[in-house]
Length: 293
Length: 329
View (spheres, helix red, strand yellow):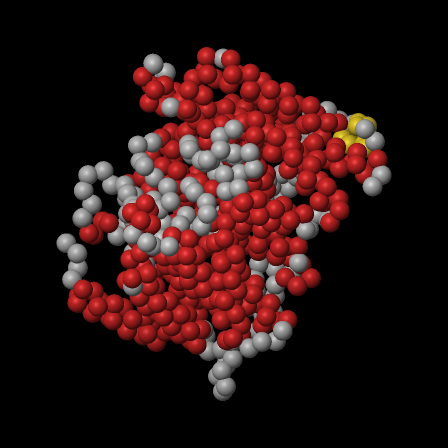
């Protein structure tokens, strides 16, 4: 194994890991705060990319990428709030909320994906890169956009961590995650925090979509594969721990890059899934996880 | 008021007779095709209801069992030249075998992890199918699967007359088996575990074994349905693993009401006709899945026990899924 190979694996592992970390942290946030699992997360990512495309592309409104990203963020805040209102909120008092919301968010995902297909059609689209050109990283040359993903993801995740750790809203979100009743007792507006969490997580998904939309081609099921990967990551990392999720995301990125390099792109996903099932046989609560809440 | 058992027996017998007479009154090939497809969905939905509704195992990989049946039957019939009748049974056995493997982690897991692992598992199967494209046709799908044969009878020249009866027999046999299972001691123990896991275990019910058995059983019928599906359509594509297929079947289980076997079957019949009917309306080809999604949410919001609860009036107070699919949660 030459230095070139190692460099190539690490670089592409970092790109994958960054995307996965952004996706999975949104899922993990909703899980810790609301105790539900949002299957529409991948579709939200697709929606973000398509909205940005429509605003920025000359075939759409042609207003440039910055406007596209801004509108996309606004749209996702709206989408996040709507999803929380319509398919999650009515079930808060139900003791089967976890199961019911699995089904309602799955329905939401289908609704969004098919809606996107109706509006934008099945033809492939691509966002313009935020930065054009190529960059030499270690011994590997990648596009500047992929470098941007590697740089932006940790910044976003760091900002998220600081926000959850130190801001008033962030601490409120964590308090609700630990004990909703006690949080309500000390005067935290739980219901507003649920909405905030959903909106933030939706924006994270949308930004992932915008970043990835210029590297991959946009299709209505653009978000499916990252969603499934994010699912696996939160299982590996153990649900409910943001740091565990992020570590697992980067690990998964590197492992997948290495597997793709050594055994090919067709077998790599199968091996990853197999590893997952084997890990769960011995550690049902995930590699780094505590017992589920 | 629950309908008395005797009444129900007569009603079911009448339905079977009606089902047997359908092809004599309906000559149209497309309508017969819809009946056949809805019977297949009925088998898949009802057997999902066994593991989901009765046993409370929140298995989201159910559609993958269907896919395993599709590909196991298709491949053995096409590549190994095995008679399609036998290949269909192989499809059921293969789905059961796969279910036994996935049951190993699932019976040890709690809560949302069951959902996640079974989801991940169905993706694993999908990836396997796509990666083995020299056999499975990959994303292009598998074509020219051999059709059913009987000596002296041609299944391709009878306007789907023969296939209708095979599908109908499959549905009736599956229903009888599923009803027998849920009414047996085994079925009772499943319900006990679902409604009160700790109590069930303390009374000596082997929880892991029962859940393994129920997954294997529900996968068997689903695999058979998958096998019949591929032999009937003669093509298979990875779309059977799609999220939309899963949500369509899930909506049948929900609309029909969990733990009611019959409910899922009637919902499958109704929803297949509605969704196919909508597909013919211009521009609704994709939109119908959106309507199915909306229907799912509405049913969960207002009728958690399915449409059937409209007729029984037994539910009191705020309707909830209490105990219906709570199982491990």
